[in-house]
Image (cartoon, rainbow, N blue to C red; front, side, top):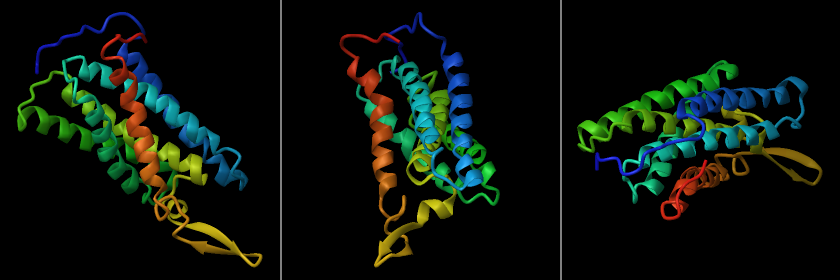
Length: 212
């Protein structure tokens, strides 16, 4: 399991993709806050751009990890990314200052991913050199991707906006939790969309090969 069967050569270096992914994702998420400033929802599309940026970074992280010969572990890598990321994302949305939520999500996800990476290498004895860094990165990708989806769908990344929706009856607009991002289980859809998207590029190219 610790023998690298594919050497990553050529293309954009991973650290460059990492930095570009972190910066562009955070910038796009913060740009969705313009919805709050302008009292509109026209800036929600920046959440979608944040999702794209995070997934491009995450898909390359999976290539780095799975180039060590983890063929059947590619889909599960996507699931663990979002399984750990969703915890950090939900906790971060409870931040008292909404503007701190993306940074809190990044930090919490990095801590969770670091712990999972350590457990994988030292308890499960997988002994994969890139495991700790890769799981740390993927947890952050999962958290920021879900936050981007939340901003795209609801127009905000605050907890109140994710748990409250509206329904119109007889001309009256009523608040409801069933039509919200969490209550309506849209977070589950976002989870699966992200988990599939992050692992599919490398998983689909295991046979024919990968070109960046």
